[in-house]
Amino acid sequence: MGDYTPTPADKFAFGMWTIGHPGRDPFGDATRPPIDPVDYVRGLADIGAWGVSFHDDDLMTFGAPESQRRAELDRFKKALSDTGIVCSMATTNLFWHPMFKDGAFTSNDRNVRRLAIQKSMRNLDVAAELGAPTYVFWGGREGVESAASKTPADALDRYREALDFLASYVVDQGYSIRFAIEPKPNEPRGDTFLPTVGHALAFIETLDHADMVGLNPEVAHETMAGLSFYQGVAQTLWQGKLFHIDLNDQKIGRYDQDLRFGSEGIKDDFMVVRLLENSGYDGPKHFDARPYRNENGDGIWDFARGCMRTYLIFREKAKEFDANPKVKQALADAGVPELAIPTVGPYSRATADELLAEKFDPETLASRGYRNEQLDQLVIDTILGA
Image 1: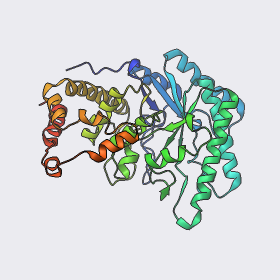
Image 2: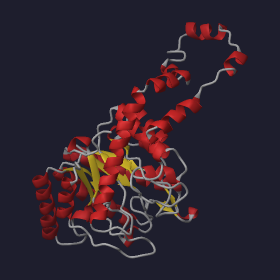
Image 3: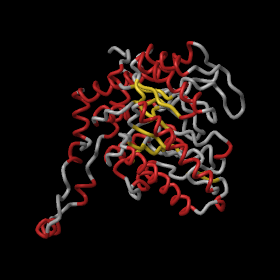
């Protein structure tokens, strides 16, 4: 059994809306008091975290005089300096205020769209000041309840226009910031634009600055759609677009739960950790989750420690899995190494003629077994410590 004590080298980060969530839900008010941003940063340092992320309205009072907002930001900056916690990511709150009820970048009201872009620009300035390398765009209100209420092509045009403008602003200001789109299929809107990893990856290819825009996939969001988070992350890595990741957990078929990482989909979570560790991903392991509503006091920090501890357990288990001779043989029996061998190589007339002339025996090919049952049982054995 290894040491599951987190250190800053692990790059574990938490959003200010996670541990600090007051326990409010659609059917009940807050069950615990808010945490002052300075105390939040100090608490993260105490439990071995590395980074913190924020919405603009988490740090600075929306609509307050600029002098007050400046003072609030300076207090936060000092806390970062005092503790060594880094600002790992920033984002804009474009969903809470009632003016965003029809959307932000895709609202039918042009003035709302303009304000949303302005609000994002101003917080990009803050993100740059705090050294955040990544800026996430979660389109929580970018969608519809009534399909007839928006022309989808127009909405996607406006979405693209906003991200193109903001990316150009970052380039013009000389900021070292990349964008990460966070897909989600529904909630709070009935149907959300860019609902899945696949939709977002396709959308990025249409942007003026596609090279500086990637993804921030989240466990709960892909799971809500009945999709494999593991497969979504794998394709995002394959396309070089994993700029950030949100780790939490979710029961299939439920609305967004933001459960403690590793508390539900244990096998999938194990595979995700193994993928991240083996891929060379060196970005934040960001926990976008919330303590149970009936927790308070030390319980909310138990939640945070649990997220990190489970990741570290899975990391150790992944190393055990990959080093196990039985696993290596099972991978060979399943043909896993064979998939890495090119099928035909680059096209040429000679290779095409060679392939056309080759003889295959369908019955022999059909007779092969791939021993997936033994391989999958070894995954379970590893996770359970058998």
